[in-house]
Length: 130
Image (cartoon, rainbow, N blue to C red; front, side, top):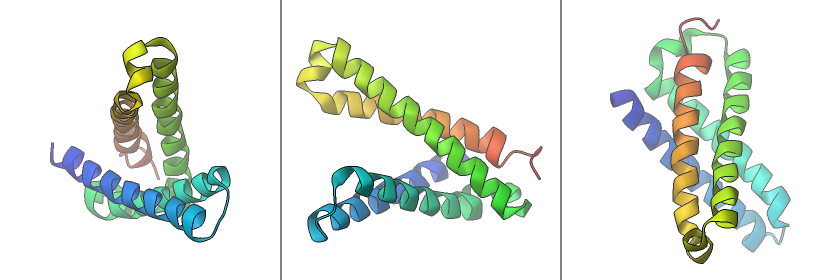
């Protein structure tokens, strides 16, 4: 449970970085929202990786940094696909979610969180990785 709570704290930090970077790029520097979102996503992944490696999955931090960082990025992309896929599916198929898309955002975020946590715990920072 402690690991899951720390993972949630890391995710919250990642969200703040994500939102801050995309806001800065779009509103402050006049960049497009799509490329800005990719940049902000990568910044958030770097933030959550550093936090989770240092605090959440301490035992896994002894493994090779480059390989672990690559697996983490891949795992977070998988979580993003699940998050966005569920959101889009709900918005498309459920009238209530179409009217209140924040419900879809919440559902997608929870699904993505679970996928990201499981992939981080068992694959990225798991005992079998070197």
